[in-house]
Length: 168
Figure 1 (tube, one colour):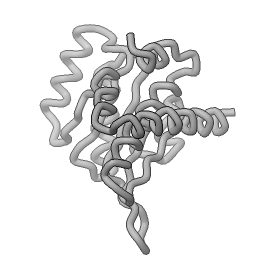
Figure 2 (cartoon, helix red, strand yellow):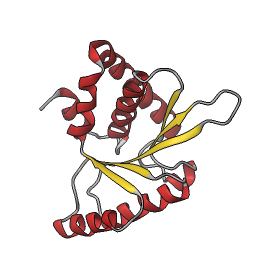
Figure 3 (cartoon, helix red, strand yellow):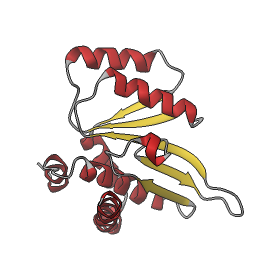
Figure 4 (cartoon, one colour):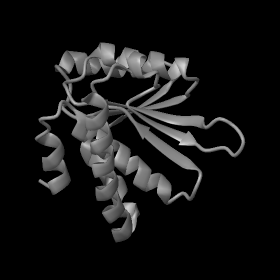
């Protein structure tokens, strides 16, 4: 297994590693798009209602002279996923006015039945809910070059430090 995959799978911190890696991937990826993007990450186990966020990771377009605009939100789930998790994400996407919502599944589905029920929820909604597994998430790092991958490791550490500071 690649080192980052091992790092995420040995998460003793209750999901913070997967959330930090997810945020790090998006921050590194969007840095390639140029200035004007801000990536916020919350500790994965802080309920989104408490953090007032649309997801565990949020991608904002920075607008000069105006409030940043939410462009994308990502739910990061480090426990087996259930249909209700999918339903909650669809609700959050609609509340935030997002037509697309990303969902990182770190530990599979709770059961095959929950997977089929969750996928049926996705098919029946107007929100484009995109399921991403850690391997797919990490594959985005192929497009950022060596300097981008070095930056990725730095920002993951930064997100982990921020999450630990806010959860203490």
